[in-house]
Image (cartoon, rainbow, N blue to C red; front, side):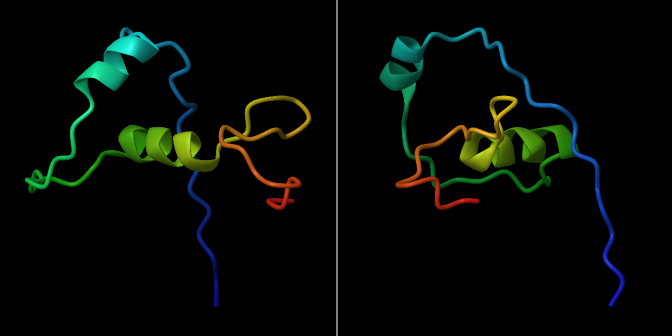
Length: 69
């Protein structure tokens, strides 16, 4: 089976909302839009969940014992 590699856009590392404001405004939403995410939105979500954050391949989220390697 042939695999297709998709190059994702780089993540946005500077935002316009402080951590405190993001926590204050956080709400669970169960009404979803019908249009699909674009590639940059998908890239941002994937980076936030497991993205590499440094030149030693540290991750954006904690991992017990670096088990992602």
